[in-house]
Length: 359
Image 1 (cartoon, one colour):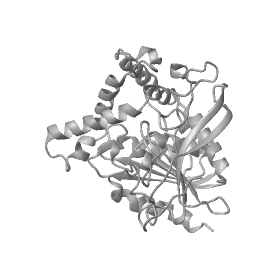
Image 2 (cartoon, rainbow, N blue to C red):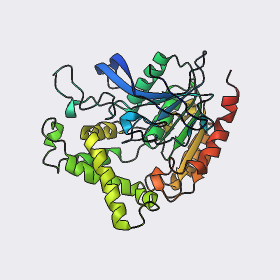
Image 3 (cartoon, rainbow, N blue to C red):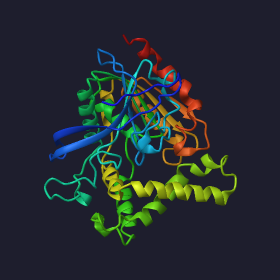
Image 4 (cartoon, rainbow, N blue to C red):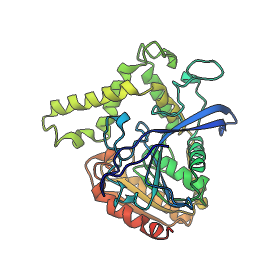
């Protein structure tokens, strides 16, 4: 196991990737994967009773590098670094934080580029049809292996929020709290979105139906798609202070897109998007025992604040103790990390009663 080094009261210091292996992993559709690997990072220390843990779940195209500085990621701080660490809202002086990479993601877990044991070649488009429930089940196995017996909370933005809601209904007795951020408890138009995604990837001559290993990887269309995503996520506004000139800002965003596409496997887009088809936890809200914090951003076009009344009404109807907070930011879908100061007190207050009860 690697060591997390805290260099000050506010800095987690160096963190490293770790890997967990699962043999004969059964999927919701009845298939079994002979071996699954899950990449993850941890911050803080697990209490002897295994009950001080927080699981942090990541977004669709981001990684499990949520906090600290990982040399494998260019020593860049994690996407929720402002929220996770000593004396921060998710206080690693008291809490043991596990940031798990999703099954099917391109950041170290078993994905389309991994070797299919049946063929000896990369899975590619033949990767099993996993679901959000399968992603969460793999995380549960990881936590079991670490000796985590109870979760103070599950927290995550966007697709990470999908996972947080899924945790709440799949393992309701295991956690005290759920923080679901810039997200929703069910997917919308997932089949249509999946069809549009695969059609877009197919416009790249290097796509080869997803069998592109050793033959390219659809990087041209992947880069353009990422650029469009970053613009939609609010990066134009986020980088404006650093690049006041719009042309310079666009060049910077295109470079970010190219860097991401170089390290991302296009099949992971399909695998993870397909996993959201049929995702709907609303029908199981009555199972939830955890308290819920639901956070949306005023300027988010993916999960707009107009979703809040319906979600909060559904939670209330199921008897769930839930509160809502709207993040006032122009940074849209990406706001929860860079604008952490605007909602960190809310998250800290939400978690405080559960942290206070720790041994």
